[in-house]
Length: 323
Image 1: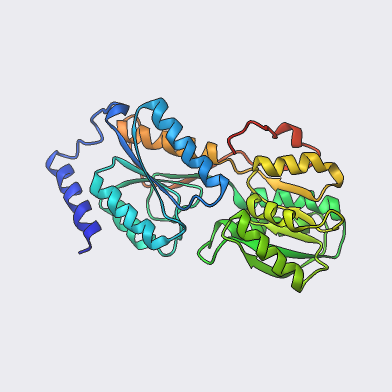
Image 2: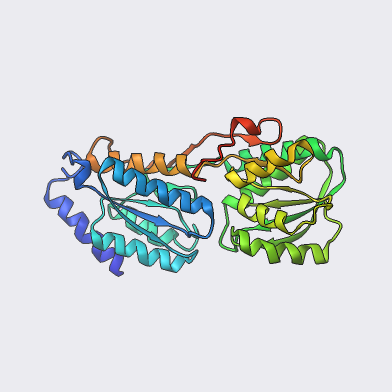
């Protein structure tokens, strides 16, 4: 039996001795502790989630115990164990690697830990819910906007990927983006890939390597706006290469707005870290206080779906946004 199993087993026993009344009891928010397992803090998207968690803790009065895993799945599993040892009421988790962490998370949930996922889930482990973007859907909308810009093609594409453990989110965004090009009638070929771990600074050398190998690229698509912005910073002013990303980062919005309909940054898809965190922590608090009964349906709840380009940028850009 693992240490995590023993900790959760003791917790489950305590519930059983109380006659399974734990969730029938009402707690005040000030009596609640919610754990937050954030995958990394390497991109503004993740920082915005963290800030929203802190804001909600201050506003609603619950205690927040937050850890970030530096993109390390093993470290995140250790942090999960620590959350259990601290006796948190609910864990809100943004999973580093759904494959590597599956067994540990499934074991934790099976032994009574309440889990809510945001952004990246561990599929089918019986959590309460997952709040995040329709990654394929927003990717498709961004791709359709790009297709309107480039026409029938053919075009060559370089793709900035996240990391090897990114099995679901990034690939779904890529699938959507390419299907958007298909829907717009654009012929394309993906000719080169680079990994930048969703970080803007790492996207700079990754883009330089791609351009060295394929200087005639037409499009660079980043799995997030941070990487796409890194790519944009590499391109000379007279470069014909176009850029697209996903997330709706305000710096990407500004690049789209400033460039207009002839600019290099063509499109992005809306993925609000603030909305995902807000919805996830609100549900966690409702479960912890007894307002909402826990469940194991793990329904995926989408945040607002939108593709953003020069035609609708003014509807979304807010220079004072936290993200």
